[in-house]
Structures are given as structure tokens and as C-alpha cells.
Length: 219
Ligand SMILES: *Cc1c(COP(=O)(O)O)cnc(C)c1O
Image (cartoon, rainbow, N blue to C red; front, side, top):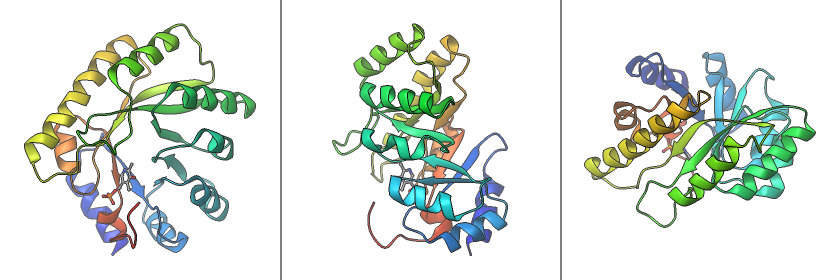
């Protein structure tokens, strides 16, 4: 089913929208099925699991860190991570820069913005974002490339609310894109809301359960 699921998602999304297959909690055998079906980008939200899968699986897989990232764990993923979606505070950004320098590379990151009304969702406030942007302008982070924004909508059945939240993030993304040519990605949309997200300008969707089936525990 995994391959069929990927194909049917790809059929309904525009060519400019990238699909990250979220494989958290799923075995490497499932990832290999998706990989053999042509899927190259995978997302994980736990460092330990991400590292274990990286070591075990084909080296041309592009690994996305999509979850909340703890500062003391950045060093484990810095050497190989393709894109970090959830940078949501300045201290974390500084640590990513430091570890990227150690690995002698430039790491691509997305700033996670809080758009949901729930308290549980991580993300930068407008003020915290402005502080980071000001430092970025001064070239403070030599080993980081901020390539866009990421956000998660409120977990609700109210489609209008979800669309409005996505739309507000798209607006912010467009504003920043005018100042920073490196801004190319807007990561929003999961299994339940990726169609709404694409309507509102997303060009990276992070889809787990619609590809791999339900997860056994909530992450
Ligand atoms: C788990 C997760 C997803 C995928 O969720 P699904 O509803 O299974 O598609 C996307 N983004 C983040 C940040 C996640 O943690």
C-alpha cells in the first residue's frame, strides 16, 4: 500500500510541491519500500531514531528533522541532515550554527513559526522571529542558510481556521522572501490538511499516516 499511497498523493499535488514522507515510529523496511518506489525525502522527529535509520539505510536518502529539536542533540544529526524544519529559538539556531561549523558545512534550516492557537505547538513568536532576522541580516550565522518557514495548524476540524492560519504564514513568508533570496521553502501541511496547505502556498508537505498508515502511539 505504501507505494500506492505515495503515487496517489503525488498525483494530486502540483509539481513544485515537495513531499517529505514522515516515517517516525515506522520500521526501516517501510522506508525501503517507499525508497524503492522513488521517494527520496524522509522526515523524522526523534534524533536517536533518525540517526539509527540514517546508519542503516541508503546514503542518498535526504533526511529531514521535523520535530522539536533539543540543543544537546544537534551534534548527532549535523553531519548528515538535509533540512531542519523546526528551529524555534535563538539558542538552538546558535547551536546548529556551531555544529555546522564543526562539520565544515552549511546547514539548511526552516524557522518554525507559531500559527496554531494551541499552547502545545512549538514555534517562534513575532518578536523572537524579528530578533533572529536582525542577527541573520548582520551575518551572524556563517554556517546556516535560512531557506524558509515551517508551521503547524491547530488540530481542529474547522477548515476555515486551518486555512487562515496557513494563509497568515504564507503572508509572512512572502514578506521575508522579498528581503532574503534564500527563502524558497514554506513547509506546511500534514496528512489531514496538506490540500488546504497547498491552496495557501505550501511547497513542502510532511505526510506520515496517509503514506505509512496509522502510528501505534501518538508522537
Ligand atoms: C508526525 C508529524 C507529521 C506527519 O503527521 P501525519 O498526520 O501522520 O501526516 C508532520 N509534521 C510533523 C512536525 C510531525 O511531527
